[in-house]
Image (cartoon, rainbow, N blue to C red; front, side, top):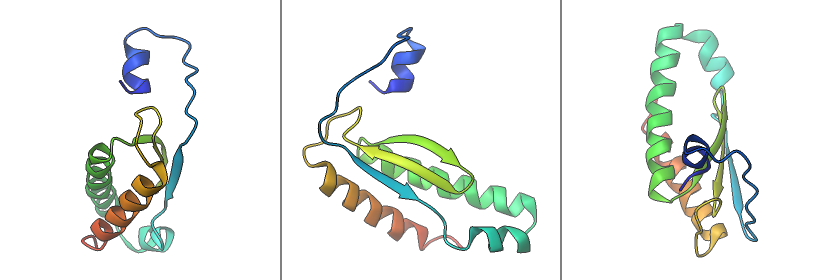
Length: 105
């Protein structure tokens, strides 16, 4: 169960221990410049499509999106859902995110 689900279910203090966790930071290169040149509606549409694609990949890897700020995303692998080799999962997830990003203009 994700931390968000646990909070919704009424847990108010969550302090789990995860001995091996990988963290990925995703940031769209050139986003600031792109956002200057495009109308806001086009930027929102782009971000929505991109975030949906990334969210789908996060779910496939049983990873957890920790935070989104603008075009940046922080993701953990192996917390809170265990993953056999967090480093490998993070590398595979990052590779898949990079591949998916090539489909966005």
